[in-house]
Length: 246
Image (tube, rainbow, N blue to C red):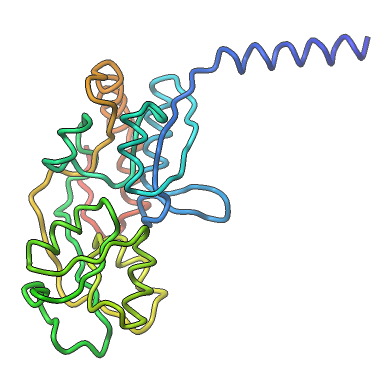
């Protein structure tokens, strides 16, 4: 009898697993508070938002943590179904993939970070002719280049910050929210100025032409907002921002 029950339970679990709708999502868990690691677990605003949307859609999320510059190629090659990583739809990116509704509409800034003893870079215009580090594949590359900086690319922004502290470069340009979180635990560097852009807010990306999945995401996002979960997450991860009740 016991053997029969074990076999039956195994069969039920197999059927449940087989019938489970899975959504494979790529992210880069290095951008606190968007997505980051706590031990081996990926957490953050984007992570909880995606989990809430997937629940509305009837999916279970399977996370794939990878380098930021590898996210869109993975999406294009079908290795993941979607990407969420504090990513906004820049002019170049929309040529490669499709984006859903913006899920963050704050005035987005990009911090210019320098060593505390830096005298030559006081404002963003002073990046002209200076070596500035940026994470490969991020919009910060183009923003710094727009101010005449000589760009040094890194696989991670933590690598760029380390190079800054080691005096290998003169500045790092990084998302303002992430910079604020990480610099709380990092000595010897400071934010000297902020660059603002006019790109739409962060969005979920899907493979070009996947209109069905994109529509599912947009509808699910609306439901998460209507339920109050969205504002709950905003207050949790961006307490310093003004949150308007929907």
